[in-house]
Image 1 (cartoon, helix red, strand yellow):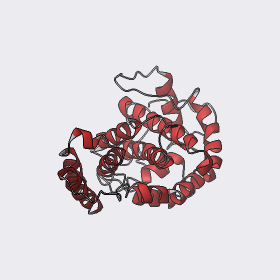
Image 2 (cartoon, rainbow, N blue to C red; image 1 turned 90 degrees about the vertical axis):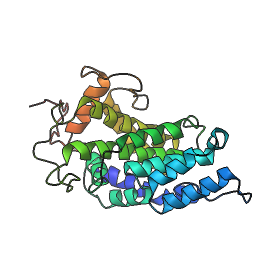
Image 3 (cartoon, rainbow, N blue to C red; image 1 turned 180 degrees about the vertical axis):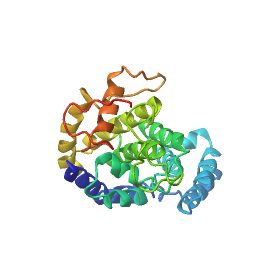
Image 4 (spheres, rainbow, N blue to C red; image 1 turned 30 degrees about the vertical axis):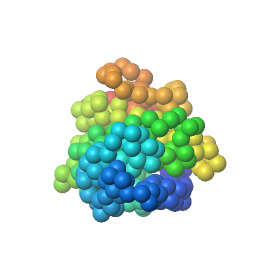
Length: 274
């Protein structure tokens, strides 16, 4: 199982070039006619490359609505929000490839060690912008890859925020002794976000088709753990309940040694809150 997730990170690293050509530098094709919108957009990309993610977001939001409706601008804005959330694409992917032998969720958590998790809402905004471009079949492979990695970032952000906050506020890569999979240490809203992140990975890894076909096949077996179609889980506009199948599945995955942060290795890995 752990080998599968190491392969997933490897495939993501190998296909990161897709985004570097059209993506984290999803930003290269600026028109030669520097209108006000184009000038603001170019400024935003420079700010993004320089690590000023808030400045990049502000610059894009100053452009006209018609300009922001362009796909390349949506991609740039999503990239800036994701980076402000803590998912700087290549840096995040690099952290995953250095987590060989660890569980899937621990790999995701490692990507946020040393990173402030307070901008989590920006990950959700980035997700919604790219999903708004179209369905997984309408989006490009680079857009789907971005969403798959963003799913890991969503998981990693929430796990680091709840399971690794000692001895420093930004974690040290070691799951805290006090952590457990129940609502005492993993609030229900965060359990919902984690399973939504998992669903985002499933939706978009599968959509990548031949680019990551082996990984998609492996992950489909794990999707069965959710007890249904893991690509349709969403709590947008709704409040989760502990009795929801998705929340039960989320806490089960969290409790699994092979996938989550728990020690359970015998099915079913029911999560009990001490």
